[in-house]
Amino acid sequence: MTPFAYLFERFPSFGQTFCYREVAELDRQGVAAPIFSIRNPKDEPPQDWDARIVERVHYLPEEKELLDAVQRASKKERLTPEIIAALDEWARRTDFLRLYQAVYVGLRLKEKGISHVHAHFAGMAARTAFWITKFFPITFSFTAHANDIFAPRKFEIGLDKLVGTARVVVTETDYSEKFLRERFPERADRIHRLYNGLNLAEFGRATFSSDPPLIVAIGRLIAKKGFADLIRACALLVERGRLFRCEIFGEGPLENQLRAQIEELGLQERIQLPGPKPQHELRARLGAASVFVLPSVPEIDGGMDNLPTVIMEAMATGLPVVSTTIGGIPEMVVENETGFLVQPDDAVALAGAIEKVTNDRLLAQRLGEAGYERAQNLFSIEKNVREFCVLLDTDTRN
Image (cartoon, rainbow, N blue to C red; front, side, top):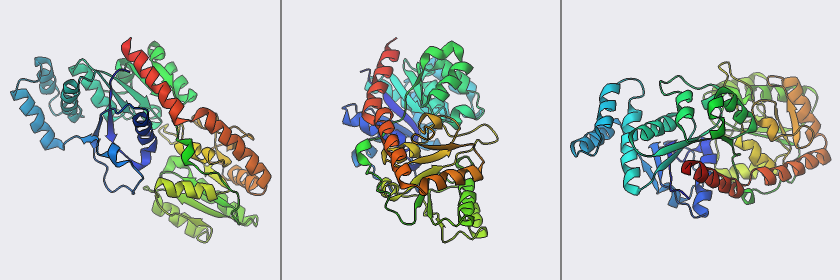
């Protein structure tokens, strides 16, 4: 296939395991794409990353060293007059570092004979890739995820320019593909849906042996995950005399607020916030669970979940899933087939769905088995990465 490189804002990252999985599967399939990362992830929870992949990451220098490196390249006449003019014209305007990062990465891609770069998210990395395309004979593509398209931040190189310039735009769900094609009809033929994938063999199967039932939730402790609604639903289950335990894994700015809510409702013995955990520990907790719950809600600015990887992971474990009807979630969770969907911000309906699953083990097993089969059909990392390679190869040759 056409040689290409990855450009990430940060890699590898606990909150973006789907990116690591894609790189690792490409590696397994014999495509060892060079990896550039604008930022070096720091203070992240320990993970099961392959050292050979992490050691391959080329981290970009910090601002001063970056500017010095570009200046040296200019003195050695490695930059075209057009690049120098663009750097001078942009000066210190907002996002100016993207131009310097583009020069830094572009020179190295040129040395490697690489003519295409792929970024994840319509954010910092994609904006840098945009400038790489402007400065060098190198095309770019990006994978659009959730808030980066539903509630994009305002930059001079915005979503419209990224979509207008990219050779390929990959997005995770039919929902987001339709969203982007309707917004950018003139680029509809460049926008493609490709589900994220999992190494399904890594996941054990749920045993449904927990007594009392164990509710598991995983995600960043931020508003759009809806964990405040899950805590309210747990309070309702207590009022109904239901026995259960609930574990919400993750970290984020709402941790203290959620802990205060748990304490205020007297749920300290029922709900735990264990923090972030390595993937193998999360897989073990999913295997011990009775139901997986992610009560996602839309944010005021339009941000929302699209294809939460944790739902795929729960389905790969054979768990029933209770979630909400936003974004691409209904493409994973089929009502009364692989789980139950409720409207966002409805703690009463959420409690009812959880109660229905945890009160009927046969129902939970039936839903979980159907979810497992759906995960096998839709979310195989091996199959989806092969499709990604074909898509990238076809479109970048056109």
